[in-house]
Amino acid sequence: MTDTSDISHIRNLLTQVQDPEVPVLTIADLGILRNVEFVDGVYEIQITPTFTGCPAMKAIEENISEVLVENGIQNYKVRMVMSPAWTTDWISELGREKLRKYGIAPPSQSTEEHLKAILTGKNKAVACPFCGSVNTRLTSAFGSTACKALHYCDHCRQPFEEFKCH
Ligand SMILES: [Zn+2]
Image (cartoon, rainbow, N blue to C red):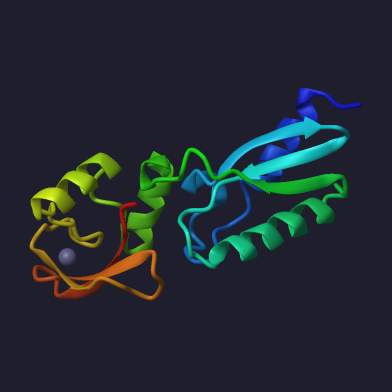
């Protein structure tokens, strides 16, 4: 007893769900929201964790429940889809733009480039989200959360966070 309009309605509701660690991004911007399917009378919300150990997933699940229940949707379940694994490549263009406006550098390289950088020991300079300068340096591999690294811009003399590549 459903049609695709219900599913797109639910999808629309879920695009409002924010990421608890980066409240400026929604789970749709991050690419965490994989799919919504109607299975055996239940709306199955498929999400993929950003990476192992990120405690945000529990909060995201709760936020999803809140939005759905508020909108009178009771027959749903949240399912974690582990494969294929999420990578920062899934962050949408809009999401990257929002990150920059928020003062967080989006992942500076694709996952493939990141892996190459690990092998060669050469990391691409991270552009400062405030002034765009690449005259920046890594000050701490861990920022306010494990998902972020702390950098310092030598051009505009401001610290900033980078959403790390995975
Ligand atoms: Zn700067």
